[in-house]
Length: 265
Image 1: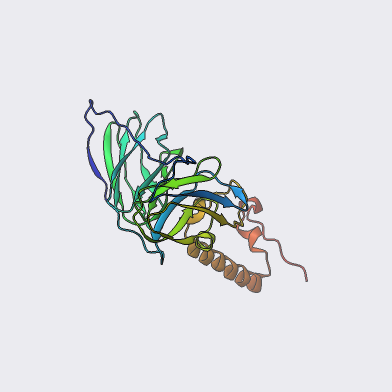
Image 2: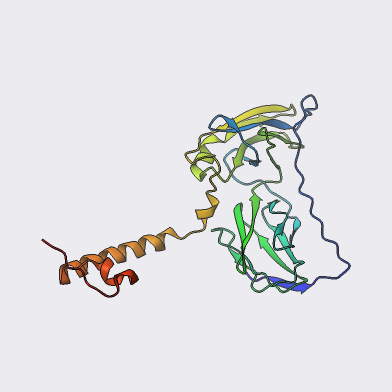
């Protein structure tokens, strides 16, 4: 994906507002869905909750533009949620060259060299988690979640959430959390009918991963290539063993010093 670049005016003051809804008992209105997210029976904070069509298809959304600053060798903010089709402005406020990229399967991008005090933009078309990193600063870590819906929010530290202003209709209430696999997210989602009355729900997920696990760390890895490499190494090891009756680990390992250790029968 090709990034666009333009000079950032000195007078430009960057700001980012990530709107989330706060659960407020006693103030529920028509068109609102409130509730809690639990993973393995425990309330979970930081989950993204969103509505889709009842069959799981995305809801039509209006794209927005959000800004992520690179400042003091950090992403600010480190977490952003946007509807599908939205544009991210990466503003380099450091006196360092950055190179922002993501290996997300559906939203892979690379901004290339990003010189100080300039802007690069990237449009993310597909729903899903988009971990972002910097090739020149390994400590820079951020996350963009591209929601398949204009109706989304995040859970608080008690697992509570609130989605407002959803029109009447039948929806699926789903959630994303870095600890949950795609299958676990699908199995925990619930369907409901919103007919002008407020609804309160409790959504329970079962996760195999331990608390604190971030499954997005491996989401962008090409496991097919890894498996092929392992298969090639195994085939090569068997060939060497049949041909010379030596351990290939001893042949190839730098620690082996080029010495061949013969197998004993």
